[in-house]
Length: 113
Image (cartoon, rainbow, N blue to C red; front, side, top):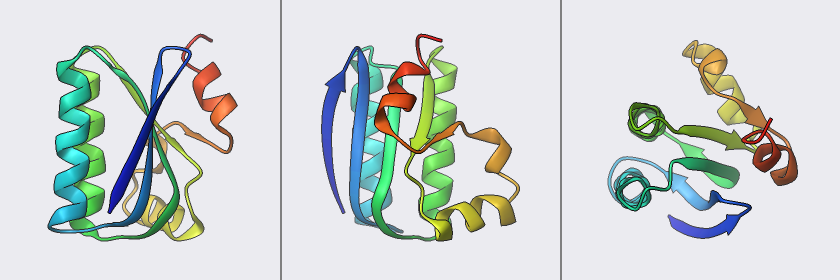
């Protein structure tokens, strides 16, 4: 997996590419989010539009990132989830936990609303 990040109006957008799975993908996500939290960046959007697959460990890591950001008084929101990821969130009953947006503009704007 590869992560491209950018700051947009004070919001950190992490664009994930590839697979969020046991091993490198989940570990990289954890390390990246922890790094941003450590720098006081707690408004985070995970752009999942280029994620081809998420396994149970990857999903657990997304939930862990959400919990870690929330525990620091921040918010983690999801962007451009695929149908497969949406079904996974529905099946695991995690869909109501996350704020999910279709466009980056909506996701970034939601932090000031």
